[in-house]
Structure formats: structure tokens, C-alpha cells
Image (cartoon, rainbow, N blue to C red; front, side, top):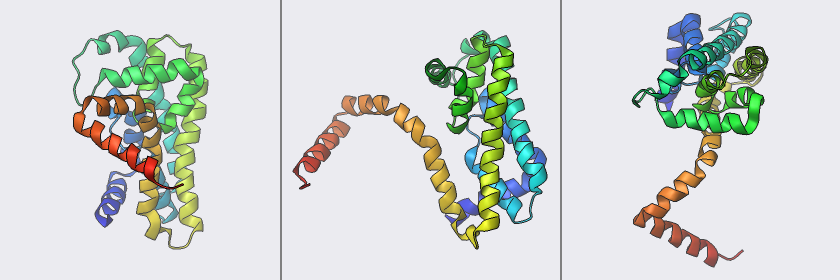
Length: 223
């Protein structure tokens, strides 16, 4: 666990402002950036700023700008190359299922998707692309984009800075905090995919049997 902590903080310190800007920019709207760390990177960088490794007056606004520009880049990719993108073969860096998942999210929540999706890994990368593909008015897009970019980019990093500067010896708890952030980040995706997970269980005899045994055990447990 200490290795994970060391790796993340060391990477952030090594890549500096330019690297952090590039990672947030790519993860916000470039289709190949979906696998990059988002929430954990923002929080950890904010924490490191509280320890003097970065200037928070530069770092926190920088993240908001990177997030806003990244989403705008994703919008124009969707508007100009969306149809071409959907014709390409799938790979590790691009899966059509992510586009479809983002489209469903967008159809359900409308423009505010651009704010809500900021806090959902993978979805936040593809939602601006979908917005561009569907021809969303750019002025309306930009409004939601700016609000979401500030809340996510500046908000999460500011939370890391605040905790780092207010709680004594918070570095001892940094890894558990990051793990909680990662869990909370992927939780919406797991909830969204619960039907697919149950369908997979039902198709697999072994998993189906284990699920049945669990249900029987729960049913026999005294309340």
C-alpha cells in the first residue's frame, strides 16, 4: 500500500504543472484519456500543494482551466469527427460501449450531464464528445462546461489542499483517503452496470449457484 502512495505522489511531483495540465486536459475530453487518474490525481496534487510542493494559487485554477479546455476539445472532436470515430475498430484506447454509456447518461440528464459526469470516471471523458455529436448548442455547452470544470477541477484539488493544511499528520491517512475517492468514483459506474453484472451471473452456472447459495444463507440468517 505504501508503494501505491509513493508512486502516485512521486509521479505528480515529477511531471509538474505541465504534466498535470496535460493529464487533466486529456482525461476530460480526449477519447484515449479515459484510463488516466482523475479524482485521485486532483486530490493528491492539492494535498501536495498544502505541503509546499506546488503553489495552490497556480495549481487550483490550472486544473479548472485544463478541465474546461479538455471538455471543449472533446466537444469539437465529437462535432467534427464523431461519425468517423464510431466507424473505427475498438481497442484499449477506444470502446464504443463508453460512447453509448455516455450517450445514455446524456439522454437522461440533459445539459447538466456535463456537470454530473465530471465525477464519474470514463463517462466524463466521453460526454463532451457525445454533446458535440448530438449538435448541442456550444454556448449552452460552454456554460455547463465552465461550471463543471470549476466544481471538479478546482473543487477536488481545493479539498485536498484544505485537508492537507488543516488536519495534522494527514499524510498518514492519504492512501486510505485516495482509495475511498477511487471507490466513490467507480461506484456510480458499478451501480449503472448492475443489470449487466446480474445478466453475466445468470449466464454463468457457477456464479449463478454461488448467488443462490448466498440468497439461501441470507434467508436463513436471523434478523
